[in-house]
Amino acid sequence: MGRAIRLILFAGSISSLAVNWVWVNLPFSSMGLKGRQSVLFGDLTLLQTLLLPHPYLALWVTGFLLQAASTSLFLLTSVGSKRYVGILLISSGVVTTTLIMLIMWRWLFSFNLVAMYALGLLSGLTPIVLGLIHLIWSRQPQ
Image (cartoon, rainbow, N blue to C red; front, side, top):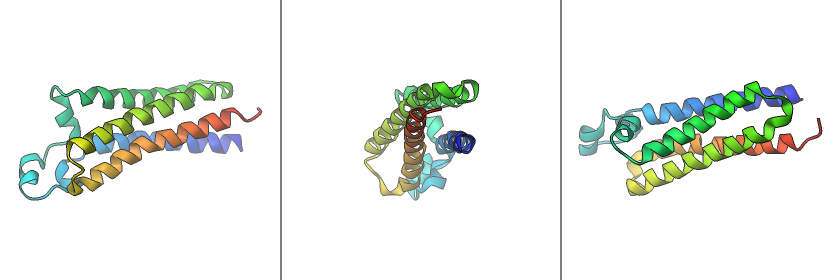
């Protein structure tokens, strides 16, 4: 049972990292922008807009690095230190969810970008759920 949970948690963490990477690298035109906004922003990605001197870049980098660190720590640590992995995952999810909420507020909750919001929320809420599972799993007797 422990090995199966460990494999599921690792696969969930890797897939969440992949969704986070895809979320910031998809062009705005593929995420639902149409009309004049698509002409202006269509080929740009969220990462390209964040690479401009933008304060939100720090949030994305922090969330992404925390999640990558938790995945690496999960591979390198023994079964007894799952609590730290859970805390890192929850922290990563909170930072990424904060970022998508700020982006939603900045774009005035535009219905044209529902796909971008959905991917962002998925990449932010998945680490929180995985971190809670890690914390619950770490409370189980060995």
